[in-house]
Length: 266
Image (tube, rainbow, N blue to C red; front, side, top):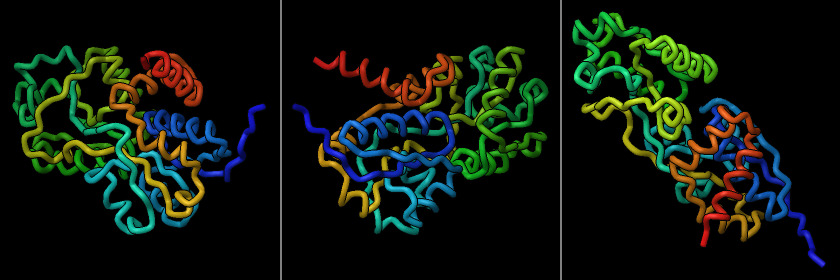
């Protein structure tokens, strides 16, 4: 007879963006498989880290370190454990694939008169607390794009996705601050442009953050699986696509991904 061990309940928190939901759903399933009841919390960037600092989140999935989220973790870093990265995210500015490379190959090209007259000069992003939003607002000034009437406009995930979908449908010339992993890259083949000043923060490590309290009660087999889990940018994008294009719930998408990877294991 199989004995099901009931483990203490744990709260998993994720930033309220779809690819963070994707990674959090895999984490939730791993904890549930080990007998933990899992509660979930979503919040914007700074708020989520503040909730963990207050003890309301046991496992935060995921912190992009050191560039994007390091400052949010710094105030309570000594009270948590940072696991190995589940993927390696990075920020980019990108244009649709139909914008010619010889017209726009790097950020500075956006200021050329022949390009600026064709580009939509409102650069739409996600919420202001995201690393890429902070970086992009600074880039508009550092590259002198504001002198050519470019502006950065933060928004929501919904307005961001709609902006990309509308622009692609209308064959518009636009630049979008985006990142890997994000399913829109997979869906539309967006083309990154060079950013030689290095203002986009480089490659981060997307790591789960576990409080000391949770480390004392988490099932050893769950901790081992989480420490060994590597979704990669491609894995997160594939789960994200299952959610946003195929219409699966995050947990159903995680289940499909985990079945697929288990079947592929020799």
